[in-house]
Image (cartoon, rainbow, N blue to C red; front, top):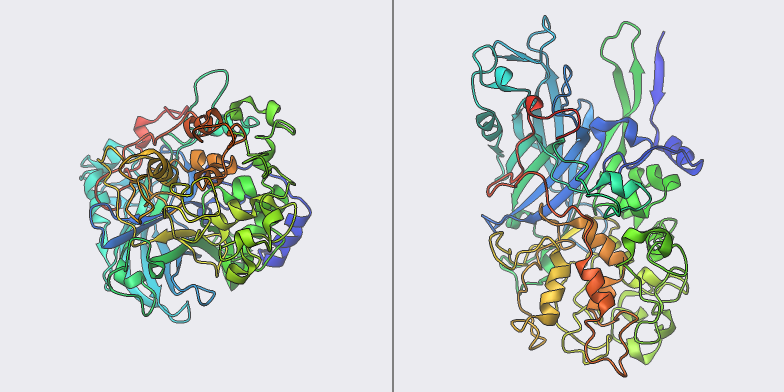
Amino acid sequence: MKFYLCMHFRLWVVLALLGVMSNGAWASSHREAPLIANDPLADNTDLYAFRSPDNPNMITIIASYIPAQLPFGGPNYYSFGENIRYEIHIDNDASKPGDEIVYRFTFKRENQDPSTFFNIRLGLQNIKTTYTLERSVDGGNLFIPIVLNGIVPPYNIGARSIESGVGLGTTYEELFRNAITNASTGETVFCGPTDDPFYVDLGGAFDLGDLPRQNGPSRDGLAKYNVHSIAIQVPISTLLKTGAPAQPRDILDADYVIGIWASASRRATKTLQTDGSTPDENGSWIQVSRLGMPLTNEVVIPIGFKDYWNGITPYEEITDTVLDPFFYNPELALYMDDDLFGPAVPAFAPLRVQTKSLGAFDFSNGADGLFSLKGSSAVAGTALDDAVFGTLLLPGAGQPRSVDLWPAFHTGVPNVIPYQLATGKNGNPLAAGKPFVNNFLPNGGDMLRLNMAVPVTPRNSPDFSALGLVQAAVLGLTDARFNANTNLQFIPNMDGFPNGRRLEDDVTRIELQAVSGVVLAAIGLWYDDFDPATSTSPVTQDLIDVLTYSTGVDKNDAPFTATFPYLAMPWRGTDVNQSGN
């Protein structure tokens, strides 16, 4: 007798619309949707993309999978799954929808000694994993192998399994470093277990937004947990769109913008065998998980649509208006509004959305934001002009965050008025200001967008900040090195999230600040306590409160390294106890 488990996408949509419930996890993309929570081997957890700090001619992309791995999780330790396509997608051409470059990883597992219950014994490994890496440069039509039999290091079980003579007789660092390989086409690649680089207080976040905790210290809920990471370092020249100059025209060159997203796909049908042998898997490949911007599916998409979101591509999403309302009126903003549910979430007290910015503009949920300006001479020639970008940014009344949150997640931000710093605007947010971001790529939806022309902020620089573009905006508005003119110049952390995502970037804090209107403030739509008639400075208490807000966890529990793959090695099973300490 055989049992058939069909994972067809249509079933996913039906389940989503019926409101299937499950416990999620606010940890970038750990167990974020009901169906993928039951399939951890295919679950994207995080995606990073940044110019390599020690080799700026290269872009490092890291996609992590398999959330919340206990370091001591034997005897069947975690590994990449067979019969799963793990893919990294790159879009570099805004003139057409779809990927230009795709990296596809498939894994194979072997039990070298089936006679033992140990994972490692006498130089042999069970769940020994290798991989094949294929690359497509024609949008996924033709794939060419560029790494064969790539090495995945074993799990970091303990000293007897790794260092001793009855184990592998080596060091874990050597196993980790030996797994770094060069592809035939110039990429450097690593696949294997690592420390989970994401940091957040999971317990506080899910206790109805107790972030930071109001009664006791905050705690990194992912401290001393592992994930499996795919890291690939790619020459910028490989990622450039056709026709782009070999050297950028300036540090915000639009031809250097790429969009990155990661996915996992499974066969449509899985047939279990009654004798316990390997299941048969066949049928078409179905996308079961994806990730671009962090936290999208956790805190923007509501539970009834999470599986649906996981099943579509960014190119389907950009034309699918069913999800747009969740960005125009984000749920999190309800807890930053004193007229709604703000008082019920005291941890968010410093985070308040503008309701009367410049005395005229209300960005609270259901308000009109800048829609009252639509079609007026005030927005003529700006990004808000229908003649420039159509109705993308001012689609209608009652959709206030269409001008900041929606483009941040769906198109990136252009270096066009009003998306420039308030520096030099003389109080008019719709005037030209100081450029500080251009990662506009409007042909797809949720992706991690990166302008590869932006220089690297050295990690040892006193200006380096985990607040990414938020800190770049602060420096551009307040630092005498940058606020004396409106010239285009590199401001430290312009290479930070959401212009790509560095490992160090505090994305939870940045996204909460963004929901609280910090991007609006950066371009001159100041907070309610700024009165242009009487105030002498827009650096008001409300702005200070937002900028100094902290979730209580502001760095990873393990230090990152200075060289590829930059991730910390996985935690050892014998060194971590059951409480994760």
